[in-house]
Length: 124
Image 1 (cartoon, helix red, strand yellow):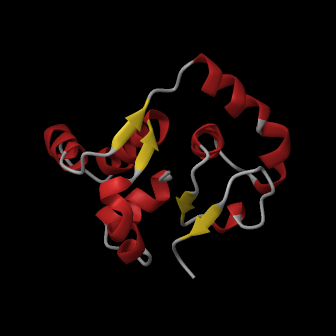
Image 2 (cartoon, one colour):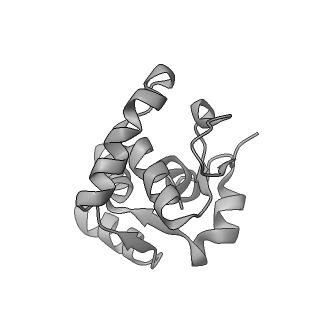
């Protein structure tokens, strides 16, 4: 599972992008996190067609944010609120829980979370 921050690290060649590049061909992402990435790229001035081309070119397995995942994401709020995790953060974690896959992020606030999902920081 790839968090928005991990995908942005890859696209912007930020620290940690090498680790994301190694797993990108078999990575999955929540539609919520894909939306976050598209929003950040749009804010940076990238045209919509270029955003779509860049993201679709990665051929990421994208998971819809359906009813069950919405509930699971919401239930994470009390457990993650002290660390300031966003809806997108919780959506990624919930999907990782649901699929029993580790999640990759650059967000240090996730470090040490005990939510039944492995968190891997791609930046040291």
